[in-house]
Image (tube, rainbow, N blue to C red; front, side, top):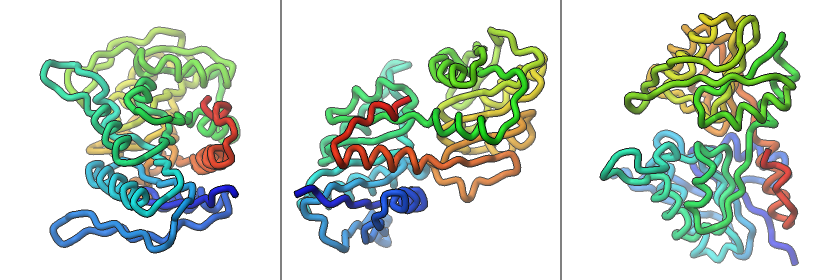
Length: 312
């Protein structure tokens, strides 16, 4: 007999979890996630999940530490309640930018988060556009690393009029991502060379590639304070780009990000809903849903079908 499919969600992703549940035709399971008066997280599952194939939604967005603790306690509650298989669906993985020791005597924080998620009882992870793909190797359990590229491409193809486009990577590390989108659009790529003197500050230096008279599409995995994205857009316009559109999977949008993007030359900012954006709206923002992609991945995992075709 096949296992029953159950969806649960922490406090970070209820709208996305409910949208995915609608695609799959199952309800979000009844669970209480609150805090005691001293701030400790309290979790209580209010229905039987014995033997079920359980998927727990939780983006590790702000406040990241609280959302990490919620996820750990939910997984522990499921394990102690005899769930059949526990999969953590983590659309946005926190601490991913701390994936190596860039200076002496610093932690590899992404590895720490991966370790605690693995050892608490999680049996599988589904995530979207990790900052560094090698973070998959930090886990001791299977990881299905999905790409939001098809979702962003479909939006561009159906809703944005592009004349002689060029896809721009804001740094050398994003060249492969830019190449994938450029292949879909049938256009060339450009690369921005920069150095970052300290976290959340970027100094743009130069652009490699032909962008004069073209519609530039900057593609990145996330937008945090938007310093990189705005500096890149200003350089592209100064070098002759006709217009600039920004695309990213994760809309962290911390600090001055919204003000910077609003006042920048960027015409549209296209983000997915891996992080809830209901309280971060502004005139240039367009949000596309990642729910159909995640729902299809869950459906295939549940029936033991290949997920590899969803990875790109």
